[in-house]
Length: 232
Image (cartoon, rainbow, N blue to C red; front, side, top):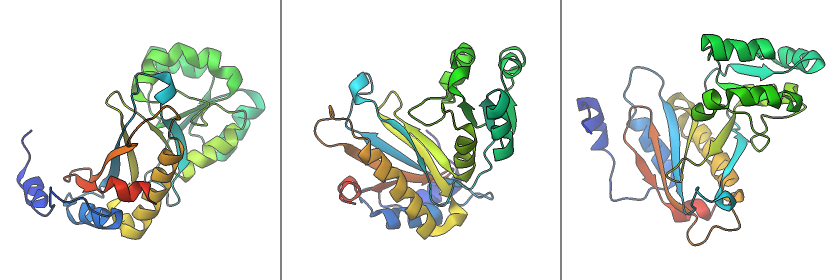
């Protein structure tokens, strides 16, 4: 893959042979972020599991103590009192059959998180092929299928993120913006990794965290020592 001049200059600052401590790696990710916008810092964690097996899935949600630094647009599938609670909590989009029709018929996708009341999942299931590939399908495990939709909206707005394995056994998650600085990013990093480690499946054998990399949106990856991560 060919990179631009700015990326190549930033990449020279990173020691590819070194496994950094988390705070060092985050400081390097900030230093190598040279875009004109406030870049997002992401964590990429490769786990020693096989996502093809149901008993080795790793999925859940965690509230980052300092949020993600971005405005989250929340869509809620609910009716009656639950719909009212979602609106009062700040959900941008609330609906039921009408919202399903907008997503299916008009391709409406102007939201970042989808929450559903349990009695709405029959409806929401119709959108599986649309929401699923985008990682937006509500799930009880992630806390996005819940009778307390108001609380779920509040948590999403406060910086709750979902983590899940992709097909290559890697979890990709944002932990904030470059402007947060090392301390806040480190707090968010610790919260995410603590949740991932606690979610270790009983069927997982051998080294659980195989590799851990942080990078800004346009910057190079910086490798973190996985042994230090597990020792937290």
